[in-house]
Amino acid sequence: MASTQCVSLAVQEAHASSSPARAVMSNGGTFAWYSLLCRNMNIGILSSKQVQTNSSFSHSFLHEGTGNKSRLGFFFERSIVARRALLFIAMLGTCMLIGDGILTPTISVLSAMEGIRAPFPSVSKSSVEAHYAVVLVLFLLQKFGTSRVSFMFSPIMGAWTLCTPLVGIYSIIQHYPSIFRALSPHYIFHFFWRNGKEGWLLLGGTVLCITGSEALFADLGHFNRSSIQIAFLLTIYPSLVLTYAGQTAYLIKNPNDHDDGFYKFIPPAMYWPIFIIATLAAVVASQSLISATFSVIKQSVVLDYFPRVKVVHTCSNKEGEVYSAEVSYILMILCVAVILIFGDGKDIGNAFGVVVSLVMLITTILLTLVMIMIWRTPPWLVAVYFTFFTMEGVYSSAVLSKIPEGGWIPFAISFILAFIMFGWFYGRQKKIEYELTHKIDLGRLGLLLSEPGIQRVPGLCFFYSNIQDGLTPIPGHYIKNMKSLHKVTIFTTLRYLLVPKVYLQNCSSCLTSEHHEVQEEISAFEEAKRAGVVHIRGKTRFYIGKNCSWFERSMLAFYEFMHSNCRSALPALGVPPPHRIEVGMLYEA
Image (cartoon, rainbow, N blue to C red; front, side):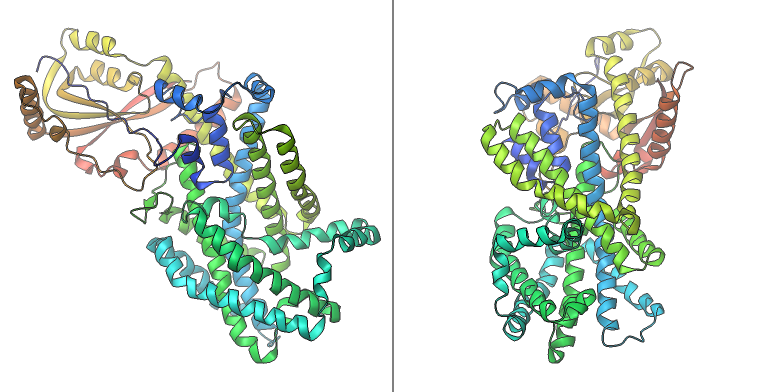
C-alpha cells in the first residue's frame, strides 16, 4: 500500500439514556461532583484523559445547560489556589471513603466480639483470631458480584429490619413508653443549655447512629436510585428509629449500661438469635462499604487520579457494579492490621466517626458548589440547603476532638492515599502536557514516512494514544529509530463508556461496501493481518534536567515508581503477550 491506513477508534465517554452530566453522577460521591465541576467549568485541573482530547465533545459537554457563568465560577477559573484547594477537598473526601471501607469490616468484627463477651466475660483476646475468618470470607465473596452477594444477604437484612424494631417496641413498652417525646426540639435545646461543652462533645458519639448512609453515594452504581429510596424509607429508617428509641428507653432506666447498650436491652430469651442476626447484619454493612470502595477506585482510575488496577464488571446490565481483586486483598490486609494493632473497639469507633462526618461534610460542600456554578439554583434555595446541612459541620467539629483517641487512624490512611493520588495525577499531567506540546499531526506523519530509508514492512500494527487531536511522539520516535512502519497502521484512542461491556466489531466487517476501492482496502487489511499483528505501547520516562525543582524531582520519581509497577492497559484489552511491543522514550520534564 502506498500510504498508511490510519483508523482512530475513539470510544467516547457518553451517556446511556440522559445527559452526560447526569451520567457522570451515576455513582455519586465526592469525585463525581468534582468531575462534574471540571467538565462544566474551565477550572484548569482536569484528569489527563479529559484534557483537550476531544474538542467537539468537550465543547458540547462544557456548555450543556450551564448558561452564563456565576461569579463564583469566574473566581475558581482565575484562582489557581482555589482550584488546588478544590482538588485537595475532593481527594480528601475520596480517601476518607476508602478509609471507611477499611474501618467498617473492622468495626463489624469487634462488635461481634463485644456481643460474645457480654454473657461470657472470660472470653480471651486470642479468640479474636477465629473471627478473622469473618473478614476473610467477606472479602473472598466480593468476586461473585454485588447482585449475587446481595441476593444471599437480603434475608439477613430482612430479619434485621424485622427483629430489632420488635425488640425496640418491647423495650419502649417495658421501660419508657413516653420516649417519643424526645422528638420535640425543646429537649435538644434544653440538653445543650444544661451541658454546654460536654453536650457538644457528646455529639461525636451520635455520629455512629448514621454510619452507612455515606455509602449510598457510591452504591448508586450498584443499585438503582428507586430501590435505595424504597428500601431506606420503608424499611431501614423506621427500623432504626424504633431500635434506637427502644435502646434509649432502656438507657433512661439503666444509665450505667451505656458502654454496651445494644446487647443489654435485648431480652435474655432473644439474646442469641439477635446476636447472630446483628453480627450477620454488620457483615452486610461491611459489604456495602467494600462495594462503595470498588466504585470509588474505579472512578478514580477512569479520571486518571489513581494507578491502574484491574476492574471487572460483575454484571452485564449495571455499569457501576464492579470488583477489583487487587483492591479487595489490600483492604483485607489493612482490616486485619487495624484489628491487630489497635484492637480496642472504642478507638476504632472514634476513627469511624471522624471518617463518616468528614465524608458527608465534603460531599455537602461540593454539591453546594455544583448547585451554584452548574445548576444555577436560586440563591435562597442554596442558602436553605447549605444552612440545613451545615449541621454536619457541628458533628465534624465534635468528632475532631477524638483525634488523639484513635481518630488519627483515618487521617493517616487518607494522607497516604492522597499522596499516591496526587503523585499519580501530577505525573499524568506532566505526561499529557508534553504529548500535547509535541504531538504529531497527519501532515507531520507523512513527512516522516517520506524521508529516505524509511521502509514499509508487511503486517498490521496498533498504536495506542491518550490524545485524539493528533498523535503522541511515540510513533515519530518509533519511525526515526526503527526506520520502518507497518503497511497497515491503526492509531487507537480509548475512552470509557458508561456501560458494563463494549462489544467491538471486527474492523474488516465495518468496511462493507460494493465499491472496488473499499474491497481492495479490505483485502489489504486481511493480508496484513495474516502477515502478523503487533500492538505498540509507549513506555515513557521523564528526563529530569537541572532546571527541575526538588518538588518536581520527587513527584516524578514517585510517579515513575508507580507507573513501572502498575498494570498496563494492553492486558485489559486481551492482547496476547507475544503481540505486545513496548517502545521506550524519554520525555523532558
